[in-house]
Image (cartoon, rainbow, N blue to C red; front, side):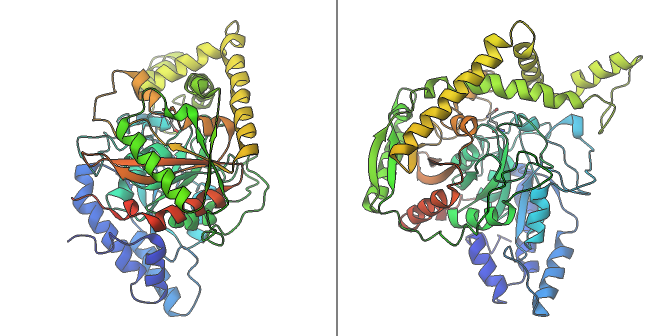
Length: 486
Ligand code: GLN
């Protein structure tokens, strides 16, 4: 039976549940039904929670007793499988953690449950979040619900495909260089990477700690605001979490666009930008202009160095973070004759090739003799990229451009060409290097029916502005209301 709630946004589902026109149990059951009928095909979920129906019943009972059920009202949520869930297997898409069951929840998971959200299951990802297509998962690739010959993007491709495939109305992803926004763009949904430090990283399996950030994925900006409000905020268990007051991001969702200064970045419209993507972005900019935005041109002169900088900084941090997988702790351990052999066999057998490549690259770039030439230099360029944004945000409130240079690519097409794969991140990595928030919103379709995404980047902690601008755009357009035909 098709999912009867497929066309609803999470905010609408909340209203249905709060008003008693649907129960949390109805909603959770429908999405579970969709997982049963579609997941074998799309492979978006690695594990499904065993107690989500019980939790839904408990929430319905609370509501019938007149108790508060929280802002997430018993709505099911897909959680990226690189985020720890107590008692529910968390693999990071790796053989290394194939049977790892965390003894604790990530803070973001605790918070979404506290707000009345229900963890529906754990969504697929590139191993340790390293990749842009979800083809690098030990648990097999996820397919794009809009076209099963195409990738859903990555690394949060499972989360994006869960939403796009109507297997979950909301999802949580993580973004180190674009892993929320790029799959959101490829799957025709909305995804927000918050400011570095806005959402606690406690319980997020670390890839590159100075870049990683957890954020919401959903059909609409309004739904992202709902989910972000639940998970954002200071956490003493994450020393990099920002002690900055959080807000209810729905409060300012209706803020108008008129008067906002929107910067169009010249560097985003050069060689390599697909013509259909360019057309959709230019049309979207016209929508913002019609809504009263003051459109200006800005420059981010160091953009061309962003991918190279990211692919030094991220592997360096990864090589350090992944040192903990030694076969002694966590799960998988290779059989060997000596301790040293056990370490190396475990790491050789249980990490995939992309993860091994990055560990080697990072170790090399951090080694004495090369540190100054690579890591230190990349850190300096990172600062220049941040300075470019600071200067641009003196002139404008938001920077608008494409999320990715092309729509989703075909499965397998970039697997043997890491440079092409890495270039899919060309517009997204800068926000992570600078620590600023950025959102991807659907803004069109290619002639072959693949979604196209628009990126808005904002000042630190300007999530409200990004979300309200996205919401106002979505009130004028219907790209976020399209659903793939199954
Ligand atoms: N595609 C990028 C990479 O492979 C970004 C990944 C991410 O944001 N987790 O590193």
